[in-house]
Length: 107
Image 1 (cartoon, rainbow, N blue to C red):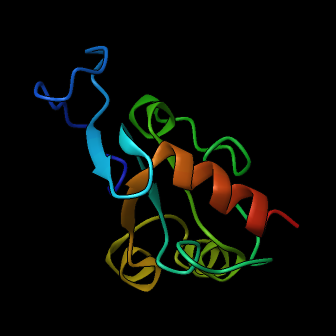
Image 2 (image 1 turned 60 degrees about the horizontal axis):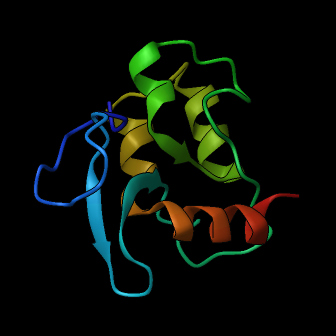
């Protein structure tokens, strides 16, 4: 699954098992994961594990989201698999970019 967590020990961020990333806009931040469409899109919908009742504890620890089109594929595939993940094209961004994406895409 694309919600796997990794720890970066070089970041200076609190070591709580979340991965740190260096964002060119926001500096050192925590990682978040979104579908390729949410990176720059707007008004595409914004789905997160809690909204679709995914309860696997590993999936709920990191910030992750996908758009309405990816949710449709995920539902058709009965969950995340190679096909639905391939359609999503998961991209790692920082948590500040994640929040900006949420504001642009929530409908």
